[in-house]
Image (cartoon, rainbow, N blue to C red; front, side, top):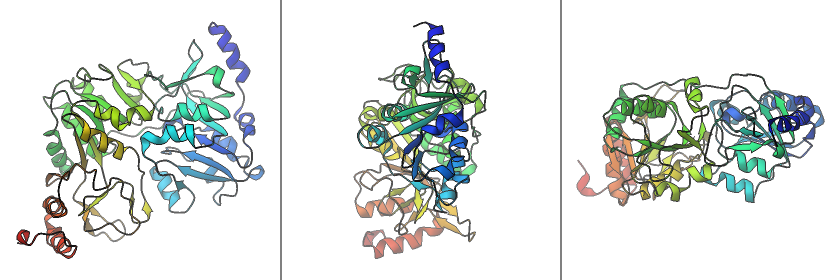
Amino acid sequence: MNMSQWTDVYRQKLTTPENAVKVVKTGDWVDYGMGTAEPILLDKALAARKEELQDVKIRTCITVNKREVIEQDPDRDAFTVMSWHMSGYDRALAAQKRVFFTPMSYHNEPGMYRDLLDVDVAMLVVSPMDEHGYFTFGPSVSASDAICKKAKKVILEVNEAVPRCLGGYGHCIHISDVDAVVEAGNMPIATIPFTTGDDIDRKIASLIVNEIPNGATLQLGIGSLPNTIGAMLADSDLQDLGFHTEMLVDAFLEMYKKGRMTNKKKVIDPGRGAWSFCLGTQELYDWLDDNPFLAAYPVDYVNEPAVIASIDNFISINNCLEVDLYGQVSAESSGIHHISGSGGQLDFTEGAYHSHGGKSIIAMRSTFKDHHTGKIGSRIRPTFLPGTIATDPRSTTHLLATEYGIVNMMGASTWERAERLISIAHPDFREELIQAADDMKIWRQSNKK
């Protein structure tokens, strides 16, 4: 078909949001796109049907705008919303029992859709259709292809502001595979600012940068610490860095603008940076648009530990909330208070360790301030609070970093782990951690001071 023929098909499927959501029935499973791909107009139209529907289950991930199906149905009379990964908005609602969490290892998500999950209706925001009849999933590739292929009905919300993101595979959908299209005009998509950290973040970043060789392939998480590391790498003298990352963040753009990020040394996807979803500044989205330097892939490729392990000198850098003296890492909850999600941290922890010359680094500030009491606490704890989720089991933890140093957990006995972790704890908490380790029978008598 030529362009005019695909345009005719598009026009046949073009409808209003109100008409499009009529396909949703009581008891259905509905999937929204992830992050910037969560629908706005379709969400509002579906929420307006609250009085007609019951027991509609909606899967979301990293909500960046208010969800009308939640705001208009606070008692969950019609809609039950679940998230694969909590944003700040999701977190606040989870504390009110208005949003529920779905655990996963991120690289398993597409497979769960293919093999286990029901999807009656998928609703996603996409970039405009090209001359060949394809829409790209924009900054939210992840599991979008698997969701659409499993869905009985696919509705697209086309937004002219969404960048056209090129990829390896699984980054686009054809009009022939779509049931309905609604148009959102040029609606700005959610952004987050690029902000670096304070002196403590800079100290941690400087320790981590020293662990990175020329030609390394990087994965970074989100937040001020990874941004600080990226800014420091951009100003370093390292050469030919690459990236293969679940989340594309502004730190990579900063390295690219300073000539550090070339992707030339990668053994897979050479010359291209591989990523699965993106959230950042408008400048970052502009960089994404129609850029062959960047390759979007489903997350079961990007986060597959065997793929990560096949890339030499792979350096994975992620944040966490706290670590216990056994070396378990929590990046998603503190007690029963849910904060973020399992995400892909374990995927990269496993994969980077098995890379030739690779390293998995989990970083954190040594202390935190309790928002309720104002007291300072240690992020290195004897044991987790009841209900705290271990994102990374102690058997997989490799390098841990605070502003006081970097230590290796791999191959270390219980007493060695306790000793090394206490050495990077804040000095104000070391004596009580030593006493706790002794009570836990993981402190050598000869280590006592």
